[in-house]
Image (cartoon, rainbow, N blue to C red; front, side):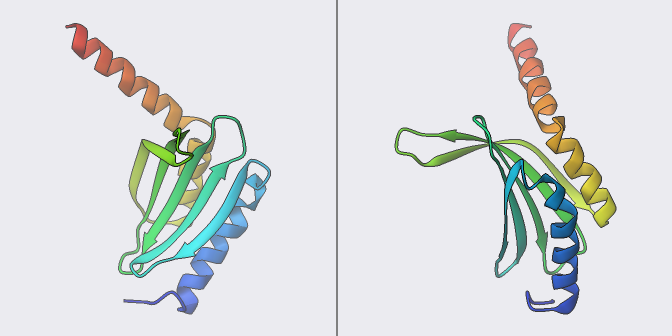
Length: 124
């Protein structure tokens, strides 16, 4: 298992950070390293923010992207509702394609479709 100081891990993180800089006017971007892997957090800079998380464990070649709708509770604590999760993303190019689709609304469409399908099931 590689650690967070591995040259390969640093290269992978740097490549992804470099690729997502084009969205830095839309998102606050933060990278963190954990015991089990690393994550890049993108928090939207608008009135109805989403948080997108790119995560990669040290012991696998696959990335995961999750998108969350953020709600501020009365106690000012962010509450997250998962909109979409995409696992087993192998390449950086595939990761960037999925991220671009999420940024442009794939997660919101997926969530709306799920709500609609749940509503139809309840009425039948």
